[in-house]
Image 1 (cartoon, helix red, strand yellow):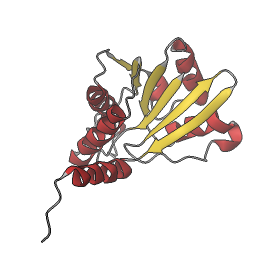
Image 2: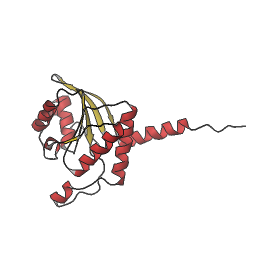
Image 3: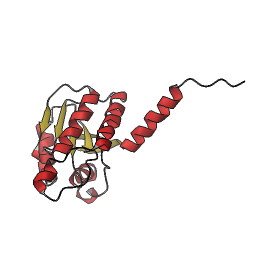
Image 4: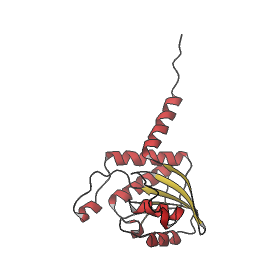
Length: 176
């Protein structure tokens, strides 16, 4: 199974009140990050059978925006196994619930999303080996034997690639 790990995009400053923080929405930068990453995934012909997100607003917004750019028509699945306080055991159970899928996208929070990625790739000793930036996506191929990291794409890299492609496609000025 292919698992796209997506950390929620930029959502401004954390709120002191946990109830208000759960409802914190993406900021303008976060919306742009989702667009950049989603368009880049679409350009790489990424397809997912399921999009699973933390129920917190900033994660579910990220999941919806990226899935929309991919043309994913399925419903968004909210799962507590991607909440900030979720455990790796809960995450493994989530993967088990989707084991028949060819590819899924999981959208969550740090530090646990990076921990899940590290532990899936390298076991308990690698839990801090990754630090997904806000809005970043990592493509991982996982099975019962283990997992293999294919690549990591940050919003900053996605922007640079898209700007480079846009400038390369502009007509060149003729010189005399």
